[in-house]
Image 1 (cartoon, helix red, strand yellow):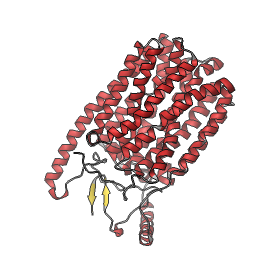
Image 2 (cartoon, one colour; image 1 turned 180 degrees about the vertical axis):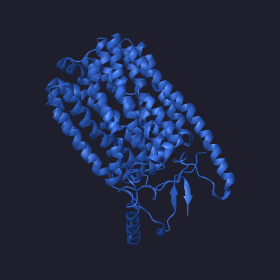
Image 3 (cartoon, rainbow, N blue to C red; image 1 turned 120 degrees about the vertical axis):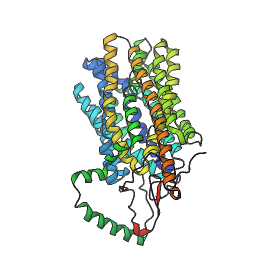
Image 4 (cartoon, rainbow, N blue to C red; image 1 turned 135 degrees about the horizontal axis):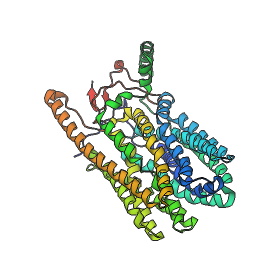
Length: 484
């Protein structure tokens, strides 16, 4: 049987209600964050001809955008802790629009790196992290399903943006297309407005207690050094967390081959003689399968058989993804690429649906804000290098198969590493839980989504979560350890 779920927040998430509106808004912002860099590859062939650059040089646009999206994670997390998800997402939407509108006036590849890669990429960073963070504040029991539905926004957007980009390019050229896309990205601001702050109910007594607690904390904060103040917004003690480190290493390796196959799928199809619309339709096929794979994966991950050992399911999904890339060179015609796109969409959807759920399962909801920021800054290096390395292999050998083999190999390796290390981690957790139960049988430990966190850390609350003081007499649940 699955272990009972408890929240390490200071309130019980509603698991519904307005939370479904939040999921809808998150599906839009997450959708743009993940699908926009993929759909942007439609313009690669034209931009390559206009600026007379190589495959690896043009691939840097998407790489910089993705790397900035992930590298901006810590900044995004700090801003969420300080201001809440809603204003951060709205500001991010503005940056996305400004970046693409500016890109329509660019006259060099370097200017595109700055406008599309850096400005729009950082705007997407301010969309992505707050969206996945706020879902953890609204959901507990249904969290895998909510995450799966929110992540399904990516294939829905990709299915729409891929043919839309081709249509815009044919009718308005790449400059006009960038201008229109800038306006479309402003819809992230509307989605962010749905992210209503949530926290424990505040009555007159609680407000007074919170006020006293804040005054006390303010006096204490004056004595803290710079490192302690930084740790208040970004919990660096996570680097002592065994499960977090395993997740971090595995994901950093995985992202070396995660995005490149999507970036070069349409160019590969054009390379073997497939027309432009059929090549763009491959991304739509991938997106349609991905669209159904993500919520279905969320349902499976939420089951009592899978959720207690969800890390194994995640490891399998990564290895399955890599196996698809290893077999891609066998697809030498359009039918073969359709089959590859179907399996790739399934595998890609499985990984994306659990990407943040497994991290929250390891560290708990209260530390997730810091965890996602630290993970994304580490991942940005391999995200940045992945597509250009693939482009270099294509330029060197004149064949796409070496790029697919490289991506497949590193993802199979990452999945195998995570499976072995998660097995070790689960064994160690079982021993530690048994030792704790033997030492203190009256205070047995409950295994939940923060089951890998054995450190008792002070909860650092952001704008969306008012701090609770001991004077309130409320039960605190921190990382699965109950304290009266």
